[in-house]
Length: 489
Image 1 (cartoon, rainbow, N blue to C red):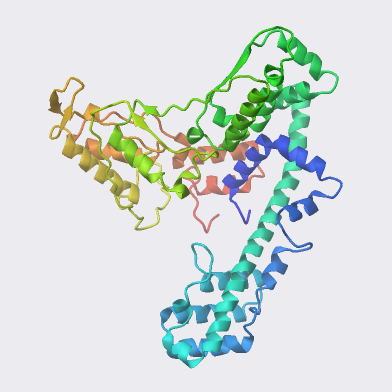
Image 2: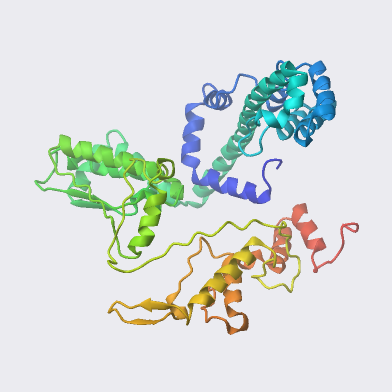
């Protein structure tokens, strides 16, 4: 629980179940050597390395002796600015800290950037007066910070190894219990159908017979949403289409496979899917078709019926940068869009990001509405700006119809797309309704479990089911259902 809270543990358990086939395969193949050793080797971890032993390597800093630490602290306090004095303060704390992990964290926070955990520019550690006084000392510190950055990465790897090892131990027991429970009740889940179908088609002695029987009934295979097809599902598709291109068929028929997909629309990790597998299967199918002297026709659909040319041009300009386009296609296909809405105008406005002023506090009022958002939050400020922009358009600006006629913009012409229906969407709806500013359709869903009253009732239910659940009991005692304070608890 030092890495994740109870909700993180819940997600971990779900992930373990969803990926149990791959986990069991890993455990089975690494059983001879021990999955601890296999995992350590895959992470590039030195044998026997632990979180504590890795953190202990950070002190004393390489090439920077305890005497150098004292000299730098004195120099920074005498000649340095606030940044150098902050580094000196961190070194002083680290020198007094006995716990190697806490000491490493102090050094990382004081001497390395928070963003990429790399050393700062030299001006952070020393100004011109400090370098003029003792250039050798400053050079040794800068060299030590580079070494510290590498130690920190090794520490994170060791921490990842420990967390992954714990997850594997937990997963092994969980998966065994899950499989035993299904067997006891004669249940199968969706993952079972996929893995058992794949095993059946590949099973020696039986697989060819299954293929022969299927060969008499499958003329065409259609794969939709191919970007969200899992590796196991691709193996089934590949097995079913082996004879499509080989000329070995029970019937003289030109059978086909039709695949539709778009990597940009991938729901990442959906049912274990890997979007890059779409590109791999495309290349493989092309090679198999050419070797079997069959036609392979890749068809790219570039025409958009939704957006205007101005909007699409802005999108294409963003992804013209190879660094941005890298995540769109494993094949490196160019990002090109053509609008079907010829002659229709569009506009793209870029707004500055709104930073949170204060951290949002959890609402513990039972009478609070589901959609309440702190007035000074970034979501509330953005909602006000969007509402003001919509109010400025509706009934004031004009829109051109398909037949060329011009009319005033109506509220129903405006659609606001959000990444998810969260507090921002509800806040925007409320801002638009204030004072009858703009007619707006209400939100059509809410999350009951996000309200504190429902959470307290769920805690009551969890405690009744499992009376050893101390966390749920504590939440229940503090709720209005019992209404005791921290001291009484």
